[in-house]
Amino acid sequence: MKYFINKIILFSLFPFLLLALSFFIADGTTDEFYVRFTTPEQKSMIVGTSRAAQGIQPSIIDSILNKNKQTSALFNYSFTVAHSPYGPAYYESIKRKLDKSSKDGKFIIAVDPWSLSLKKEKLNDENIFPENDMAVGKTRHVNCYPNFEYLIHSYSSPLLMIWMTKTLSALHMDGKERLYLHKDGWLEVSVSMDSAEVQKRIERKINDYKTNEVPYFHLSPVRYEYLRKTIELFRNHGDVFLVRLPVHANFKDLEDRISPRFDSLMTSLAKENNIAYLSFINDSTKYRFTDGNHLYKESGRILSKKIGEYILSCCLN
Image 1 (cartoon, rainbow, N blue to C red):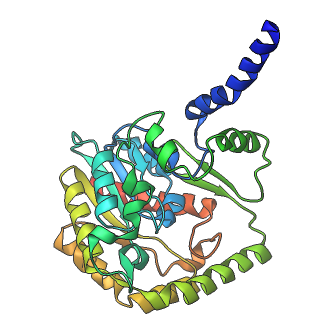
Image 2 (cartoon, rainbow, N blue to C red):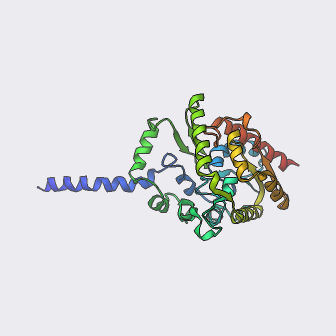
Image 3 (cartoon, one colour):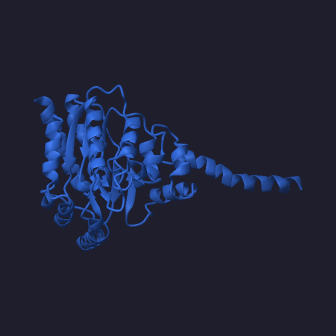
């Protein structure tokens, strides 16, 4: 009887043990956000939406800048257009992630009309911005491992799914699209680049934005002010570079509907703050995109190299 009871207790405790261990095995396979909240404060950062999260690779830029010991390692603290448009939630999260002792950091701020826009039915009241109740807005502790706060309150699946995603990833059984969040914050997306499949994804993305986004979005003066505040924050800790990443030509046409003079607006903002603005928006034919909006990782490597070389040239002048 005692043996039977001990067995029951053991089997009863097993799920709880697995649950507890979930906090300690969570990593870059867990989801596309978690790792960014588990690393220390950062002296040099990349900020923006998923376009930057996937398209700008810190290790490539570091390999160029560190040849001349120009900067501390870059960290990609970009999320998605839903989670990290410029606004109070993202600004406060960036402040928590920033190492206040940084004096000669390098800061890349990725911009596009979506990151500065708001749906028309939403007033320009920062207290009701939709991202306030999402992971970036809710997570107060952004520099701790394991990050219990994030996993309990913002992880979108049951905790035991951490085991499954980790196992499937190790066995390469996690579907046609694989996501891996590197320790430097770069989100690596491995997806089929078969031309027919890519074209289908681009068409779906374009149609979705054309129907569900473009008619309802407009530039927000409040978001613009938080972009300005982000620039001012980073300028106190090093060199700042505004960057607009390339997109598929049809996607650019959609952005022009929201803000046809966006490049001019960013050029003026850069001049006001005595920083550089680097726009690749007219270079769509030079790169490959997974869905029209996001750079394929090989193209991201090429673009990151160009950004690194540009920053290095600025540092040497």
